[in-house]
Structure formats: C-alpha cells, structure tokens
Image (cartoon, rainbow, N blue to C red; front, side, top):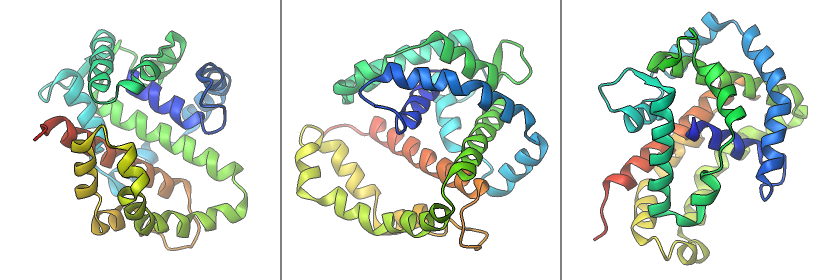
Length: 245
C-alpha cells in the first residue's frame, strides 16, 4: 500500500535520518514484530466500539478507496493497490515533482507487512471496513507505544502545545518565507491560505483532551491523528479538483 508505506516512513523518519530512507525502512522492519504482537493482543471489539464513538467514518480511508478503485467499489485487491501506487506517483509528480523520487521508493517486505495487517480475513483482498478497522487499530498501537515510552511531563505538555498550533499556523502560512517557498505553486498556496482559517484550525487543534483529565491518552492521540489525516486528505482532494486561473 503505497500511501500507507509513505506515511509509515514519514512517521518513523522522525526517529531516524530522513535523508537516509533505507535506515528508516530497516527501523520499521526491526520494530514490526513488536507492533504485530501488540496489534494481535488488542481487544479489537473494544477498539471498534471506541472508533465508532469517537470518529465514525474515517474520511481519509474513504478518500483512499475512492481514489484507488472508485466510489462504488467496496473491495480492493493487491493488483488494484499496485496500480493505485503508480497513479499516485504520477499525480504527485505533476504538482510536486521534487517529491516524486521519494514517494516512488518501494519495499516489498514493508508492503507485505501492511497487507498482513489490512487483510483481516486473509482472503487476498481488503474491504473498506477491514481497512478502516485495521488502520484505526494500528494507529491505536502506535499511540499506545508513544504514551508508554514518552516522558510523563510530555503527556501534559502536549495538550497546550497542540492547542497552540491554532494560533501559530496562520502566521506560518502567511509569512514571507512561506510565500517564497510556495512561489512555484500559487494555486495550491491560495487554497491553503483560504482553507486553514482560524475557525478551522481551532476545530483541529483545540479540545484534544476530550476526557478533560489534562493528560493525553492513546485514544485521544489516535483521534487527533485521524482528524489530521482526514483534513490532509480533504485538502488533497480540493487541490486535485481545482484548476489554475
């Protein structure tokens, strides 16, 4: 799964050297047995109930399915996924050619790891529901590991830090350096400026601590991560639907 492989690499690159993707991929492979065991030991029924309570539809997964196999399809095969990966590389190269090489990196072993998690009933394909449940549970595992190994003070400090992004991002988006950086993509820059207004950013970054205990738990982190991924997927769709003028 090209999109998920790219997301995994981007996440784990924070702990390795992003300039050395091979080191990041090796790190993922080494940690996979630990992740797989944690995933297997989850109370999946409880996770699915909490997913419905906290989130319901996961927009970025629906967008992925729509993009890869169309809005009417409920299943995706490995062949569908391979073709979708090629399509994504072409589309990224059109808008951001500087990232085309990075996103085209592929590792069969990582792909097999992802398929093993996604294909819950082991029938060689995966449904929207399998995809949604397995991705949510995977994010819960990663969030749990973060909570487990993070310094105790970080779990409380993260709440005001995340909330502060609602005020920080408008300044970052509209400053001179960003304008220069986005000079080659004026259409995309206009969309970003228009979309990420104060109200929208407040919805994304405020009230992360929804159980109000002043400390982030794995459930809250998972919901926050999915909200961000949903927002990015909607932004990508808006960009792809817009035309230069």
